[in-house]
Image (cartoon, rainbow, N blue to C red; front, side, top):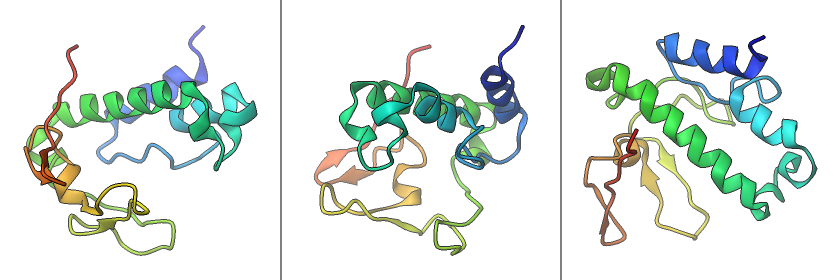
Length: 128
């Protein structure tokens, strides 16, 4: 039997747009948090669980695999709305709360872009 999370993940790869948190309870992102439960289900506390980092690395990895299906389009555009309902675009600012410099979506959409953030090139890839 294929679990619902695997089906949801498969549907992500077929989708033309990427929204890993469309439904916080039934998306692969939501399953990682709510399926584990405890601290992982706490929006503010989950970052203190070591599993959080493994889970978000997996979501990041899946995003890159999705981008690799059509990199010419999937690393150069974005759609949807932010939490406040504002339309997203490549110049939307991602606020880092003072932990790191704020970045534009375009600065981090392609992990191999080499965009310099805080004096360090943003450049990494996954080995599959």
